[in-house]
Image (cartoon, rainbow, N blue to C red; front, side, top):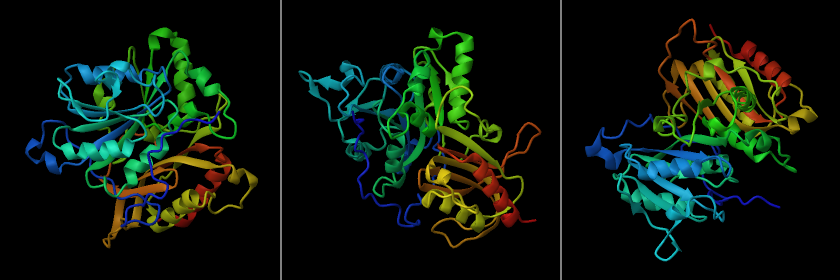
Amino acid sequence: MDEEIPELIPPNAAAEPESEPISAANAAPAAKPEAENRPDEADKIVPATILTGYLGAGKTTLLNYILTEEHGKRIAVIMNEFGDSQGIDQSFTSVDNGEMVEEWLDLKNGCLCCTVKDKGLKAIESLMQRKGKFDYILLETTGLADPGSIAAMLWSNEELGSDIRLDGIVTMVDAKNIRRQLGEQAVGEMNGAQKQLAFADRVIVNKTDLVSSGELQDIDAAIRDINGAAKLVHAQYARVNLDHVLSIGAYAGVDPETLPFVNQHGHHHIDSSISTVALNAPGRLHWPAVDEWIQELLWDARVPLVDATDEHREMEMLRLKALLSVADFMPVGSEQKHAQATVVVQGVREMYDSFVVPRPQMTESSGSLYKLVLIGRSLPQDCLLKSWATLLEKASVQ
C-alpha cells in the first residue's frame, strides 16, 4: 500500500534565481523574540518550523497546548490532515456543522490556526496576507509526510522567500513505540520513522513516563545512531519549552551544543540503513575545492576523489551540516570574496547553501569544532573518510 504523501511542492518548482540551479538562497539571520521590533513587523522575516512525527507521537497534544494556553507567543499554526482524519483533534479541524476549516482563525491566546487538506503552500501564501499578527509559523505534517520535501518547498520557493525562512525540522517520537516503528521494514524505500529522524534538527522524545530509564537510554542511542547532529529533549504529555521548537535557527547556523561532538555511530542499537558520518576539518580549507567536493557529493550522488563502486550507487544523502574555516570564500550571488571566513553549510537532499558566520569561541570542551556532518542512507563510511582525507591534503591552506 502506497504512502499518502502531501503534494506540498510543485514538481517544477524553481530555485532562487541568484543561486546555481539547485542551491538554496542565502539564509537569513535568526529572528528576534516576540515583542521586539513590533513597529517593523510587516517587514520582518518570519521563521517557519516543520513539526513531524508518526501518529500517536504527541503532535496533537503539543498543538493543543500551543493553541489554548497563555504562553505569550504569537504562533500561526498550519495543521495538515492530508487525508488522515485522525491527524489532529476534531475540535480543531471542523466548525460550522462539521465543515472543514480552510480560513485562518484568531484564537484567544494571540495565536492563529488553520487546517488544510493538500494546500500547504496555499495556506502559507494566505497567511502572509496577515503578516504582522504572528511571530512564528508552525507547519504540522501527517505522520507519513516526508519532511525533506516540505523543507525544500519552504527553502526554495521564490514567492515566499522574502517573507519567511526555514527555521528547522522538529520530530516528535513516541517513546513507547519508537523502537518498533524504527524496525519496520519498508519495501523499496527508507523506513518512514528513520527518515523523519534523519531530517530532524530537534527531536522530542515524548511519553517518557511509559518507559524505564534503561529503555530511554537505548532509545536515545538508537536516535543518535541515525542522526547524531540533532538535539534531543525528553517530554511527558508533550510539554516542552517552546523555545526548543520555535526560532531555533537550524538553517541560519549550526548548533554549538551538538555539532562539535558528533561522532561516528555503528548501528549497535537498531538495524538501520540511515546513519551519520562526521568528517573533521582541523585546519583552514580552500573553499572552491570544498564547494566542488560538496557539489559532486550532492548533485552527482557520487563520492568524490575515489573510484566509484556499487556501494556508492546505493547512497542517498538526506542532510548535510558543516562549520568550516575557509579561504577564498565567495557567497552565492555576490562578487565579494572573503580571504578568510568561518562558514556554515546547510543541505537538504541535493540543495545546499553556504554563508559566513562569526568565528565561534574555542574552548577545551569544544570538541572538534570544525567539521562536516552527513546523514543519509547507505553511506559508504570508509569511502567518505578516504575521500575527505584526500580533500584535506588537496585543499588545506596555511
